[in-house]
Image (cartoon, rainbow, N blue to C red; front, side, top):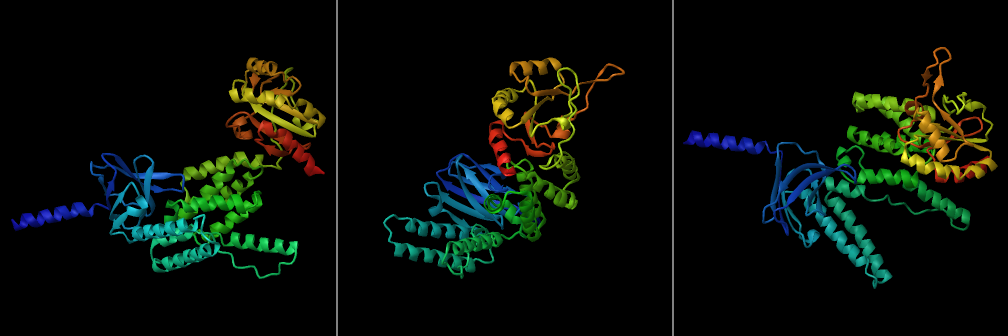
Length: 462
């Protein structure tokens, strides 16, 4: 019996040891409903790690042999309700009442989450008092000082916890007082520049870019997006320079990979003209230049994407487009005498192209007054569909082209233009704007914005 008892103990211990995570919960107000455990991947993506069914008393348990990556998780229930939990030691329990989650939630065996919710409760209490409309300015100032004091004390008391990093990463940098004179408008401008430069330089101070757990929080993505949207001039050189400075601090592989991906994907097809140059910089330096960060297929795809995008950057000469007109004559775009050329690449059967063509045709008189020509090219090598499109939308005044060429020896049709890879046509229509030297000055400009864009180009030339 003793041997059997010992063997049973070892067996049960082995089963329990295999449970890399074990999270028990009881939610009052929940009954026989699914509960999800997921971690954040930025603020707008969650990766589900486990799903269980709560019993009639709202009790549930997440348990598994998988090692859960550390970070900030959420437990989701009742469709729209969820709680955030810090995942450090994945063996804890919690309870709450759905009528007041923040007030009733408690944890056992989780110093991280106990501190996390104590912070939230205190801050919620302080700000509810600060926001009272009848509060005097002196009382509000005192409460704001109390907020600062509490935050400093809390951070000091919980400095060893990951949750302290989480809270710190959500704060903005505090700007030291400006010590210069403020006697003129120029002095005020200097102070504002000082504040902007300090804020920008120290924006990521509270974010530990060497801690991979930050990838599994909402805060890193929010910081990146706000930084590049509000603090960085939207030109490729500025974006590239600021990206390099951030990545100098991002030593952790996961954090580094995430930052590269987020910035590069933002500027690959960004609506702000010219910013694709930043994507090219990031792709060359951090995808192709650091292949160990990525799998071989990702590096290969990036090389293929660069081969398409790089020749089409603003300022580059427009690649040769092999087209013939209605009479079958070759179109020589380089010899077109226009000050600006709008290149409209379309599919005759594309519904969106049929919507955009009349809008573009409505600009004919304006274009004529500004010496703007339109070259319209069908990507479909179907003469009947092409001619029908031209007739239907009354665009005979444009230079209409198609990639069909008769071989003089064989008399057979030949095709020379790779629209997808040479002109990045992955959907239609695509619009390019060229200057008089046939260099790209605009790309993917919405048709409704073309008039304003031409006016902008005219103003810039003066």
